[in-house]
Image 1 (cartoon, rainbow, N blue to C red):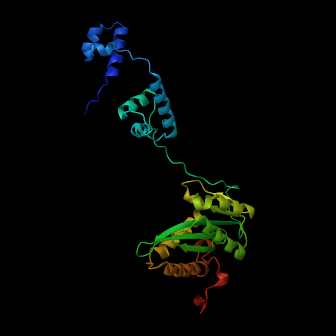
Image 2: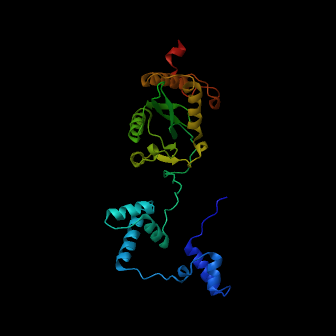
Image 3: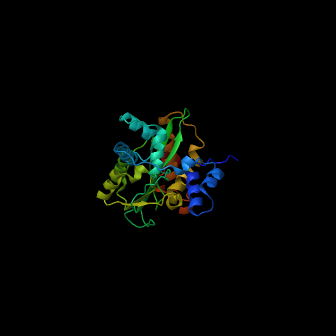
Length: 283
């Protein structure tokens, strides 16, 4: 194992303690610790006004750039005209107790719920939404926004695109609100598209409450997680999408089958929306 080097300043401090407590003489302490007696007797001089200015500027730069180490601080000082080396700056920062703070764990942004966690009791009571990702055959990204009614289990919408923003979320909701009515609550995780101020402000104006699950707790949004799992198992893992348009067509067909044909165990093996059976099934 590699031994850690002991600095002269540290050896001098130990020798001074030995002499102070009369454990040995000054000469013996220096001999034992391999310390020059001139180093033992050294007394630092008072800093000059120029050095005081340098120390002040060092503190300012270190406060302004807390993630900069002594090398970058030295480079900034030299850029300003100070004739300093990196070791000089390292020593001054050490004297001031400065160091680059360890990287902190990122704070998970959380949305602010406008109501208590609610169990859906009727149609349009609680909607839930989430994203699911896939790719076309050449590696192009596919991102899907799925929206579900928690009471009826009906898939209200699947928006498929290369990328989706908070504005795309608003556009999808606007169309749904016109065609299906406005829900009392919408449940989601803490994704940036859902916690965006524009989305929460728009929903608030319409009187729609927002329910955000705890970060890292997908089971609190179990209905949409179960739906996305079925979509992954029955469609996305079985189909190879060549283009975005092909993906939209196949996903649209699966959505209709899920709503109008597929037996749902929680509904007594009835489909979520049997009143609008897809015409190709009835013929």
